[in-house]
Length: 101
Image 1 (cartoon, rainbow, N blue to C red):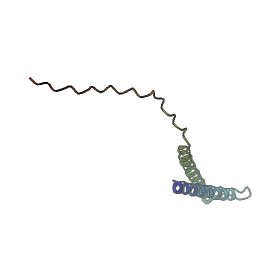
Image 2 (cartoon, rainbow, N blue to C red):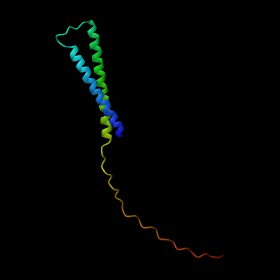
Image 3 (cartoon, rainbow, N blue to C red):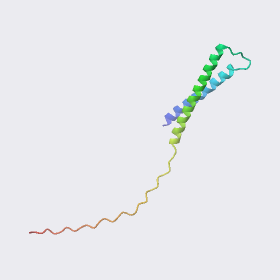
Image 4 (tube, helix red, strand yellow):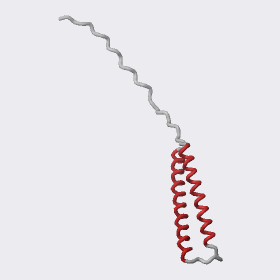
Protein backbone atom coordinates (compact mmCIF):
# COMPACT_ATOMS: atom_id res chain seq x y z
CA UNK A 1 0.00 0.00 0.00
CA UNK A 2 2.81 2.39 0.86
CA UNK A 3 4.50 1.71 -2.46
CA UNK A 4 1.28 2.48 -4.33
CA UNK A 5 0.80 5.72 -2.41
CA UNK A 6 4.39 6.77 -3.10
CA UNK A 7 3.89 6.04 -6.80
CA UNK A 8 0.72 8.13 -6.79
CA UNK A 9 2.60 10.93 -5.06
CA UNK A 10 5.29 10.84 -7.75
CA UNK A 11 2.63 10.99 -10.46
CA UNK A 12 0.99 13.94 -8.74
CA UNK A 13 4.33 15.76 -8.42
CA UNK A 14 5.09 15.13 -12.11
CA UNK A 15 1.70 16.53 -13.11
CA UNK A 16 2.33 19.63 -10.99
CA UNK A 17 5.72 20.19 -12.66
CA UNK A 18 4.13 19.73 -16.07
CA UNK A 19 1.45 22.31 -15.22
CA UNK A 20 4.11 24.79 -14.10
CA UNK A 21 6.17 24.24 -17.24
CA UNK A 22 3.27 24.63 -19.69
CA UNK A 23 1.84 27.61 -17.82
CA UNK A 24 5.22 29.37 -17.91
CA UNK A 25 5.63 28.52 -21.59
CA UNK A 26 2.23 30.03 -22.42
CA UNK A 27 2.98 33.09 -20.31
CA UNK A 28 6.19 33.71 -22.28
CA UNK A 29 4.43 33.09 -25.59
CA UNK A 30 1.66 35.56 -24.71
CA UNK A 31 4.02 38.41 -23.85
CA UNK A 32 2.15 41.68 -24.67
CA UNK A 33 5.15 43.04 -26.60
CA UNK A 34 5.34 39.99 -28.84
CA UNK A 35 3.55 39.71 -32.18
CA UNK A 36 1.45 36.59 -32.65
CA UNK A 37 1.49 35.29 -36.21
CA UNK A 38 -0.27 32.32 -37.79
CA UNK A 39 2.50 29.90 -36.80
CA UNK A 40 2.49 31.06 -33.18
CA UNK A 41 -1.25 30.42 -32.94
CA UNK A 42 -0.77 26.69 -33.52
CA UNK A 43 1.97 26.65 -30.87
CA UNK A 44 -0.30 28.48 -28.43
CA UNK A 45 -3.13 26.04 -29.05
CA UNK A 46 -0.78 23.10 -28.57
CA UNK A 47 0.53 24.60 -25.32
CA UNK A 48 -3.01 25.19 -24.06
CA UNK A 49 -3.95 21.60 -24.93
CA UNK A 50 -0.92 20.25 -23.09
CA UNK A 51 -1.71 22.42 -20.08
CA UNK A 52 -5.29 21.11 -20.03
CA UNK A 53 -4.01 17.52 -20.22
CA UNK A 54 -1.62 18.11 -17.32
CA UNK A 55 -4.45 19.57 -15.23
CA UNK A 56 -6.67 16.57 -16.06
CA UNK A 57 -3.89 14.16 -15.04
CA UNK A 58 -3.36 16.05 -11.78
CA UNK A 59 -7.07 15.95 -10.98
CA UNK A 60 -7.28 12.21 -11.69
CA UNK A 61 -4.21 11.53 -9.54
CA UNK A 62 -5.55 13.70 -6.71
CA UNK A 63 -8.92 11.94 -6.81
CA UNK A 64 -7.25 8.51 -6.67
CA UNK A 65 -4.97 9.49 -3.78
CA UNK A 66 -7.90 10.98 -1.87
CA UNK A 67 -9.96 7.81 -2.33
CA UNK A 68 -7.12 5.59 -1.14
CA UNK A 69 -6.37 7.78 1.88
CA UNK A 70 -10.04 7.91 2.87
CA UNK A 71 -10.24 4.13 2.66
CA UNK A 72 -7.44 3.93 5.21
CA UNK A 73 -9.41 5.83 7.86
CA UNK A 74 -9.77 4.05 11.15
CA UNK A 75 -13.08 2.45 11.85
CA UNK A 76 -14.54 2.48 15.31
CA UNK A 77 -13.99 -0.65 17.36
CA UNK A 78 -16.89 -3.05 17.17
CA UNK A 79 -19.02 -3.12 20.27
CA UNK A 80 -19.03 -6.50 21.96
CA UNK A 81 -22.31 -8.29 21.48
CA UNK A 82 -24.56 -8.14 24.49
CA UNK A 83 -25.48 -11.71 25.11
CA UNK A 84 -27.56 -13.16 27.85
CA UNK A 85 -26.02 -15.89 29.98
CA UNK A 86 -26.16 -19.24 28.26
CA UNK A 87 -29.27 -21.29 28.93
CA UNK A 88 -28.71 -24.20 31.30
CA UNK A 89 -28.23 -27.54 29.66
CA UNK A 90 -31.19 -29.90 29.85
CA UNK A 91 -30.90 -32.49 32.59
CA UNK A 92 -29.52 -35.83 31.61
CA UNK A 93 -32.07 -38.59 31.47
CA UNK A 94 -30.84 -41.54 33.48
CA UNK A 95 -30.55 -44.71 31.45
CA UNK A 96 -33.49 -47.06 31.89
CA UNK A 97 -32.83 -50.60 32.87
CA UNK A 98 -33.29 -53.05 30.07
CA UNK A 99 -36.51 -55.04 30.25
CA UNK A 100 -36.75 -58.59 29.26
CA UNK A 101 -39.87 -60.01 27.71
